[in-house]
Amino acid sequence: MPPTINRYQQGETIFQEGYSGRLGFVIRRGRVELSIERDGRRLVIDSRKAGDSIGMIAPLLGCNRLATATAVEYTEAMVVEKSVLDGVLGKTNPVLRGMIHNMAEQLQRAVSGMSASGTLSNPVDSVAHILDLKARAVNGSKGSGEIVKLSRDEMAHLLKTTIGVTLINARVLLDQLARLNLITYDSNQRLYVKTGDILSMAKNISQNFDSMVMGAIKSESELISLSELSEELGVGKDVLQRKMSSGEMPEELWVFRKTEAMRIVQEKGVDFFKKRNIKKVEDFDSFEDIMFIDRETLAQVLSDMEPYRLATLLKCQDSELQERSLGVLSSRLQGILRETMAMIEGVDEMDAEIIGNEVIQHIKVLKGVDSSSTPVAS
Image (cartoon, rainbow, N blue to C red; front, side, top):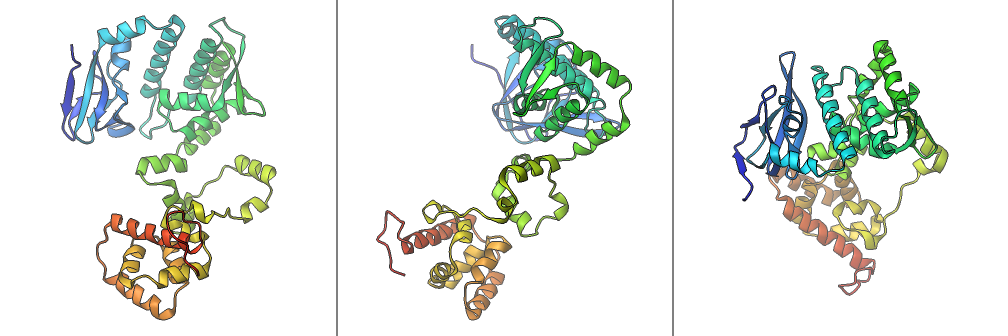
């Protein structure tokens, strides 16, 4: 029997927070936003795309929906019946099956404990339970008091998946647990959990949780990594890096972790921050790589171009690339290009990319590293 495919228009609700649910879904096309209502406010807690599953917790635990799912765009989702889900889990290793149920319960409690600010009202207990469950699964559920070694990165991804925090916030939570002596790290950033003990210690801390520590966790929940911002915006990390280096993004957004930064200083030395890696001409693959070519070669290539085509290319570049290009040209040609750029209203980015590739190809020919063309003498 073929699977049932439900179709939703943009803005249509797939399921509603607080209502019962016996169906799960796998998104085949489109994008879905998950949100909860807290203090009269709608709080978006996650976004899912094609290939992701949604709504599995309610049929798994027999509880009400933890969040509202809304189609952000036209969406197709394959329906997963509770009987199918139960059948799949029934064939799963009992330890793993128990871990899945327990993690689902942890997620249910974690979402219920979220405040209107989108942070966990008390994350220590939730994280401790998840670490204890994982440690017991790794150790074969041998009971309490066993010290189990886990991967910090693996645990950070697990926390991201189970309690809906970003990777950087997941690592913050793990570091806070280490400061509270609930877990320990070794020199290779592996973490050690003592089954059972971590739960009792977390309970004691939760009952008398220090407001300063909680404040630190909540303040750090504002942080987002460059990779996560890139994914959220759908913009390449290189674009964000150029915008930061050219001053287009405010300095206040540049946040470094002191311990991590000082570790790099100790490992690589101060000179590491003073020198810039040079990209070889044969590795050039986009117009941005003109930052690594000498002024004379760049001037020769750009001066040979028809001004309107060059202006079209530069119109699509950031200020750093524009100034690098204009800076190698004569004052007269600079003036012509600036005037032409000002007159151009709309530029097809595909056209600009083609022109940029031609510039890189010309540079390679001049430098004698292009295998498809005869090198041109400079």
